[in-house]
Length: 127
Image 1 (cartoon, rainbow, N blue to C red):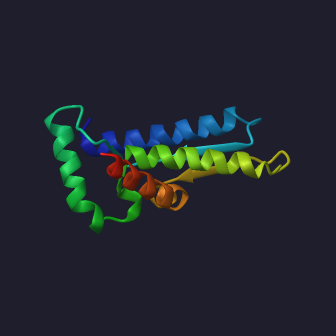
Image 2: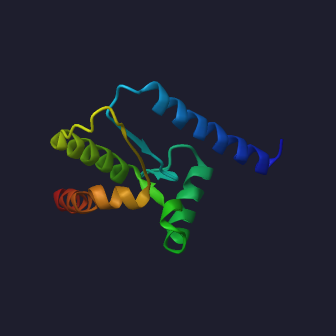
């Protein structure tokens, strides 16, 4: 199959998944699709490849477009919670129109960046 064809097939399947979720949830007002590139944890859990990838992203992230940045699992979780809280507080009725959003690294930072940084500092102070 080859790497290039496999990547193209993967992206196509992901696009079809997103389309299926949006179409099948026609009665859901808010649909949020989080699109992290690489999810980084504090400790590599899947061996040497995982550890190498995490180290590589630390070096390469500053030079990549933000869409391709690695995402700390804690930032991703904080962004999901902050986005859900924001939508619940809005309680804005869009009528029958869905509010569909695809969120990437920039969105995670804008939604939960400050709160995330504050929580990291608080956790370090506790240690």
